[in-house]
Image (cartoon, rainbow over all chains, first blue to last red; front, side, top):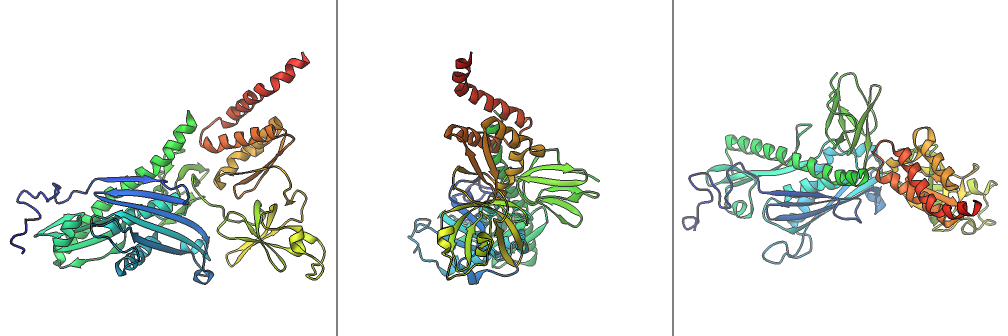
Length: 245
Length: 239
């Protein structure tokens, strides 16, 4: 089967979707798209379309989940039934529960949890259309939603993956590359503090390739981070200009 | 002692603001003796203190703050009050009744019921306990008339203005009583609906344009213009 398979990357280093090895997919970010949420963000990362909404900090319900000494971040990552080719059952799958936990844990280091004891921040991530790398795109959007809600943060968190297709380490895998490729390394990174908050690996890489992939993903995160800042500022710039005229 | 921003620059969480001799102010934090922003807002320095005036924030209770809240529940010996903060506040019955509270004699829901609005002061608050309110001072208590409006809590200082210049100007120009809850809820009571409406429009204008300079003058002019349209009739009569 593999012989029939088209090469994922050609001799010139151009991938199936026309990108170079270290090129990101086109990215569009928008902040404050939902009026009922305290903070929200929308991301289009290649063909991924994801909405993130943040609420709080507010009193935790049910109350027994509140922590006496710190704030609790609750996160729900959910894929819409129409987000993939084959209908996905709307009930949370094993994978979604895992991603919810992973996203929660990679955002927690960015928050001052100890400042707001007994409260909770709720984060809802809805994948409207998926095309590989949704966890990273979700993290990017979720960080913006939390910042938009006015929750103090140490830094914005940007997510980006790198991986191996055929024998090349490449940046930002999309669905086909993720499924047919050799490895996938999603990374979430806080550029200003130079801290990695999420690092996973699926597949097999040599230690050299792994290092290369992590560095590549971190560079990708830095690029995404700049766009995040831009998107956040844009929302308030618009408000500002309206006020000034 | 470098500073990495221009005055009134828009910054995002995580942006490096200053290093060295500076002190961290509002909405900033220190990591390895460098000062970073923790919220989106406009930076400024006050002597050696670096402050970020947040464009988006929520209210955190502080002892002594005047707030406006909504009663959400009548309990056994007091009320639970929503003060638009991460915590709900408690108002004790004995505080309102100003005499010992006896559950068999006093019907709490006759004094305040769910949905009532109150002006109150935060009597106590710490990490481990929900804020407690008091209404035992002049000017505090149940709201019986007027209009309520909500602004982002961080904009309240702007509505007050330097040494209260803005708010006293609005009060004077519109003949309204205005109570500012530090939790971002504002009560406007005037003699007529038009007066109240005028004051509300002025406050909304301040919220929208809070980051611009020369605002007090512009608001004064705005109020004069608006009043000009309605008051002119009376002036003509006088002539």
